[in-house]
Length: 114
Image (cartoon, one colour):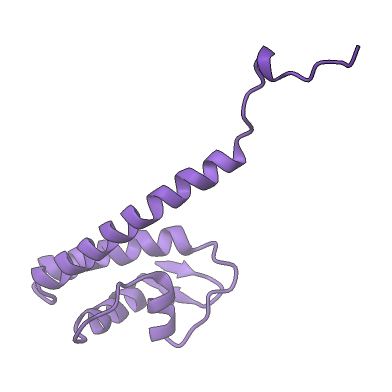
């Protein structure tokens, strides 16, 4: 299945790249950017990123189930992903708070000068 039409990357390409990446010592977290770089490609429009993330982690699970990468490697990658999510969570809440205007209450309405 074609995952990225801009860079012409299939799910098979992603599977092979994830396998090679995860077999490296101190393997990096296999994000779309890491996988694309490994394939010597560039992300252009990034419209494929959500599908790429899903495909990467589906392929990791498949490779683990097939015994081609160890459970320890998958667990380490998942642990780093969870830590990354935890680090980003407070930032997301702060940015959302800035986006939403504070509701006006009667005490905050400007009073016309008399």
